[in-house]
Each structure stands twice: as structure tokens, then as C-alpha cells.
Image (cartoon, rainbow, N blue to C red; front, side, top):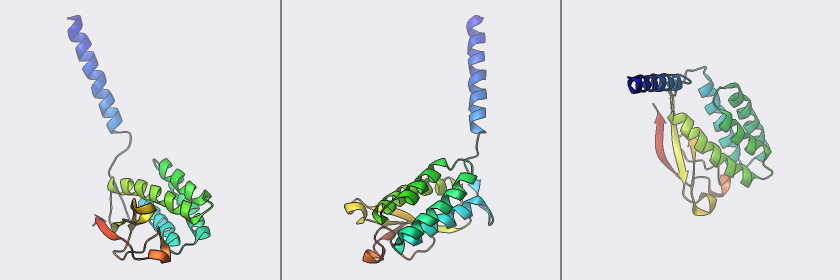
Length: 163
């Protein structure tokens, strides 16, 4: 009898734990026209555009703007930190490396959220000494943030995200 009660008690605790963990934060948020996700995407794309232009100061400013948006949204601490690395970088090369890290985090974030817009995961095989790197764009046109005008159109669309 004692073993039966222990087993039932354990199952009850496990069930409560699983239910609680499942309700901490919904994983599949939906974007809306005025929502934080759209604002975050716009801020991310502004960083990308500044790097395409090879404008370190503009990339810094846009990364700081991204941080302001990310810190006001729950669960975006890692993206906030990555944008901070871009803002604090001394060189455009460092900014581009940290932008790759931010792109990886944004990709994960975007895959976990329902998008009401179409975005493109783009890839340049020559970035970072031929290791390759990807970024997210709102256009199929390749404008490479890792090389700017040096190799502006180097890359391919790897995946379509959203609608």
C-alpha cells in the first residue's frame, strides 16, 4: 500500500510540474501589425542594412535601438546581449561577426513565432574565411551584410520564413 501511495504521489508531482512548465511562456506567439515581433524584425533589418552600407556608426546606433526593443520584451535577453556586442564593437569586422551571432538567434526566434510577413534566410558561403554565414532579409535580393560593397550580391536564398 505504501508503494502505491508513493507512486501515485510521484505521478501527481510529475504531472503538476509538466503542466506548470508548459504554461510558463507560450512558445508560438503570433505577430501582429503593431506587435513587438514586427518592431524587432524592423530593428534587426536596420542593423543588416547598416552593415551592407559598411557604416559602423550606423550599425552601432541601430544595434542600440534593437537593444531598447529587446529589453522591453520578455524572453529576449540573449538577443539583447548579442545586439550589445554589435553596439560595443570597435571594427566593422567585429560587428559583422556579432551580427552573424544575432542572425542565428533571430532565426531561432522567428522559427518559434508565427509570422504574418515573408522573410528570407540568405547564405553566403564565402563569409568568415569560407565557413559561411547567414542572415535574415525581407527581400529575395541578395545584399550581403558580411562583405558590403566588396561582394554585395554574394549569397543565395536558403529558406523562406513566414507567409
